[in-house]
Length: 110
Image (cartoon, rainbow, N blue to C red; front, side, top):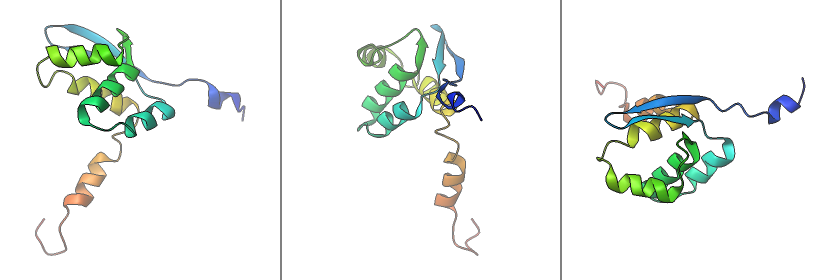
């Protein structure tokens, strides 16, 4: 194996439609960026970090994402942030974890 392949960026990109606004291009986060997100406290701050790191076109700073948070309807940013998380592989275990969390004991009928 050519170890240089390990160091070549392989970050998937995708377009996300924002109704009434247009299309934004986002990308997967790399491992260091994902860890930065994990270390960010607060939902609003975490969303700013995810969107600023994963925005390709337009590129956005955390301050610009903050401005967007103030101007947008409540649910507008969530699909964009979720797409970045999906591309980054951060949601792969979510369905399994949800089932394990809400599964009852045998015989509960759940």
